[in-house]
Image 1: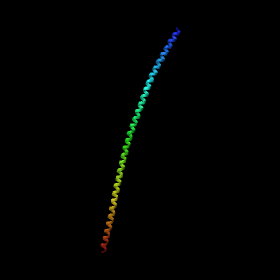
Image 2: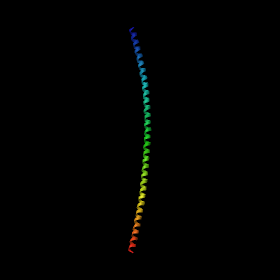
Image 3: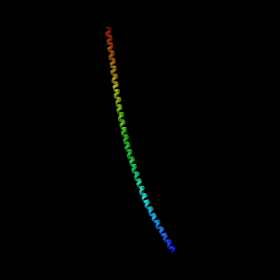
Image 4: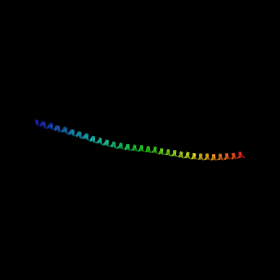
Length: 112
């Protein structure tokens, strides 16, 4: 009878171990699903980071484009200023020549 009892205890122990193994396998399956979910999440986050990087890049490029436009506008203004300065210098020279001619005429007239 003791041997039968021992066999029954062994069988009960085996059944308990089987149950424990089934529980571990279930948890491993859950763990693998969680690992897969994490991998998918990381992949999605990588995509989001890439998209954000592209958005940031586009934003930076827009800013660069605006800066280039501003520089072009400044260069145009500098060119316009240089043109006005050139015309002013020409007018001043012309006025000086006219004044010198007028002074010469006045000087000649006063000598007469």
